[in-house]
Image (cartoon, rainbow, N blue to C red; front, side, top):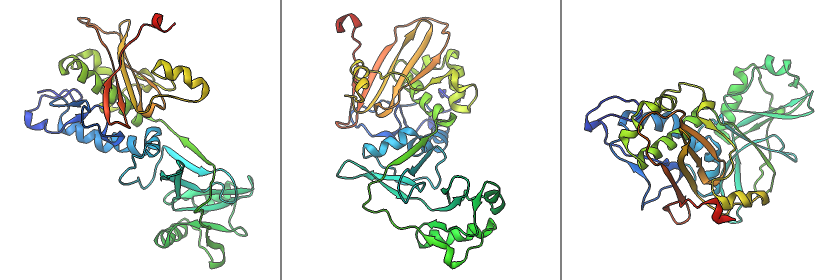
Length: 335
């Protein structure tokens, strides 16, 4: 048996684990989760889980969207590189927070992360640094932060407070009792939060993996083993190649009705959407998890071989926990 990612012949005993087209961190669909059997070897399955899907589910735009749909991660990452949320107004401006859950009022509840705030003499406001990312004293002074006469805010519970103080001392910033304070709680307050989200190569590889998994589920393992898919395969498994050759961000919504409603800031479809079709001799997939951002994924640029009709689409309904096929309708019928 040959794995569609590492392309290594292995015994059946190395293909025990199942591979879900849509990672389970984005929802479980009991009836038809489009699961691949005997397709991805256990070694590659483990690699993807540890090095890609962990971050897709907790440190990506789609990971952020999980909370809105009530799919909360069992455990947050200690430090997230790709998502940064901070309060954007009031006395707590600049404080770094993470999304906790969706409350009964439909609003996202937040909690503060362990951090330290220093006052910038240049910007005339506080800037905050998470535990493990606090700059040295010399670095802060060189960037205009005032450490002598301004309060240093320390945010965290009792244990986190001790760890933050220790880190400050290691960075050459010893504190006196009268300048080391804990910021007041924000419980019950409604605040505006600004989010900065980065889509890096790790997340792009994970999105492309969903598309290649989908192709295998709709056509066959043997078709995906073709050398036509070696470039995207190597990008997904080993990170080789330019990400721009395989993935484009900010595409129009996949469904026609969502394209129309987007003009008014709304969408009718809830859940994940994925489609697959030819564009001349290129095989293209469009993917939208939670029907938020839409990605165009180039699985093959110049297909060589026996041509076959490929035009598939599925909707993963997060409310009904069902997977249904999408039907293609001619544009002429929509006029």
